[in-house]
Length: 185
Image (cartoon, rainbow, N blue to C red):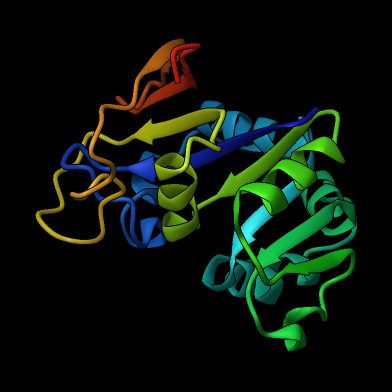
């Protein structure tokens, strides 16, 4: 059975929205490697509609000797959407119903990691329904003062517990924090 692992860029104040506007000054080779590891270690992508559209507009244009682009373009991609017209990107499928059974079936069909990049609404939904196995927050040393946050109340009425799997500090002060759901879900 596969596991679902989400990777999000985060500010110190918890903003995960539009990292393309604020994270690049902190990007170094180590962080690039960590981000790449998510995609190279996964056997599929699960994305929300908005993130899928952003990825589909850029990744297919990156070709040639770019290993990561070839990897992402060739891997199986699942998009949560009711719009079948999104499937112009190779190896893409629609998940028009996202519920426990559709996610469990997706995990059962994979033996490795099903990666999520961005897709705030989808990640929040997976956390709320105990379906996210690992959460990787790449926390940047910046306070933005506004923007969408991953953890805005209400998430759930009961606490959600995670255990720290790994932590890495990059030379830019960015922390790469990987958490796994604890057994007492």
